[in-house]
Image (cartoon, rainbow, N blue to C red; front, side):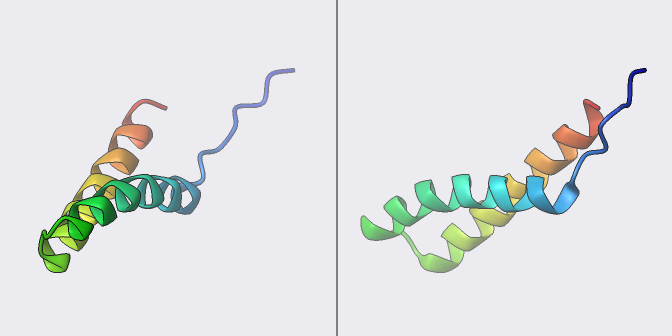
Length: 56
């Protein structure tokens, strides 16, 4: 009857990275280092995927 949906880790990672990347690209446009922006994006996407997996 009820089929539990499996979570797509890669889809979650891409979605989280795109969301974080938009915000950090605005920060780069205002003078932030691109390397710091990439690190923030990767960290935010990783944490979002971990939280998504833990709440399943």
